[in-house]
Image (cartoon, rainbow, N blue to C red; front, top):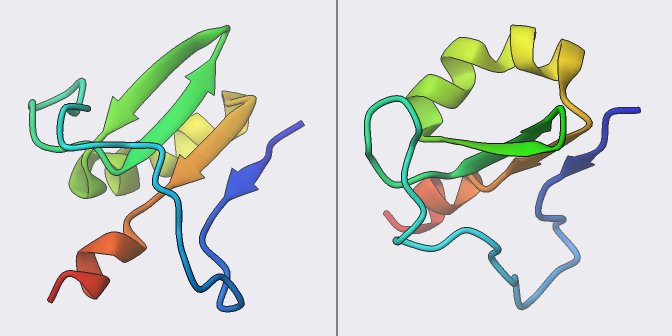
Length: 74
């Protein structure tokens, strides 16, 4: 079962699970996406998360996406 965790419009205060210390497993940039695959957590920046999203969602047991924070920061 795939689950998706994204901020809702009704949320006034958002609690972010990923911090600046969480780094992308592909390039080391700040992670905004976390996927659980076979009991292991994989972290990705927005770029690599989107690049691998289709394949990861097919096998991931959870998908946590905080990329909306990038738009909010501008």
